[in-house]
Image (cartoon, rainbow over all chains, first blue to last red; front, side):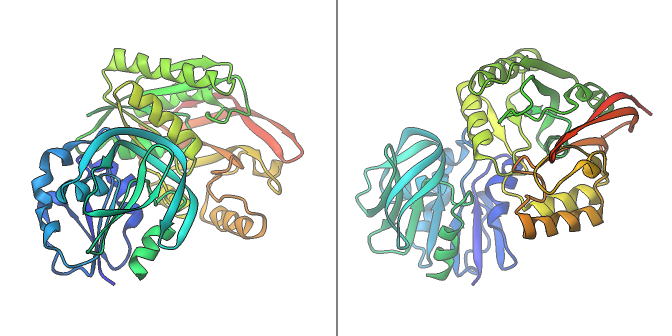
Length: 169
Length: 225
């Protein structure tokens, strides 16, 4: 399974935190500003970035490829916000830092704790089903007709199973 | 971006300093909390005074602040230390050596967010054995300066990190669940030399305090050479 990791970090130092934890021997990483391996990949993961990094919000047009992609996509934090925005949803102010209780059904898991690190959340999700929530945030969504997922929490912390399931499905 | 590093003189914050000082970023100061509570949840305590000569060797200014180390009050002290760096050195971001502790990382993220600062954790989620191997490969000289878990005993205090010690630590993980890089507070470390040190720290005199699998290697006299 060939995984393309789409890096949303504007500062290289953040990549050690938000990108490198997902890399493995059959993945390639492209920054969103210079995507070149979309054709190569079987699945695509769009990473999160630092709490104060909002550069991706000024470059949402660089993600128009999502409208026509026919491969499974998983967006994490800023990645989930990007997916939401491309399909007509809204990015809203919603800060959450630390461990939160998540309830719903994400890849078969109905209750778990997750690490949240975001200043924006998502709403107006007409084209999506909401899969899981925490007390103050929508935590996981899936596009109604495509294999496109968004999760707001950070699965690289204590919830590696999320990416493993995404790769398996 | 101008960055300040939360610096304890241990292996993780020293390595984070090296990693942060590259590309579009410049480390402009080190920040140390001197906790009077040796069981602090937030801060590394043995030999924290040595950060002064470590900073000198790294060629960086150091600002420090004392804290009694009471659980949430120490966060107020930390916030003040970071504010001081923001004012004096115009830092735009804070770097930590956090590897796995959500407790530490989320508290620092909150302080940075309140102060409109970026937060970077370049060792975050790095496999602990890989971290130790990277430190050796990059040429760091590291000694064990504190222990707080069975079966570690006084023989560990002052020992230098080597390949064979990494093997030992991995075995201890399998047998006793000790985190190989001490992430669970099992041990503390002190960096005496590294790729970004201008001079090595020579320890002339030390003493050990040890009781029942808990102890510290206290440096009493050291100089840069």
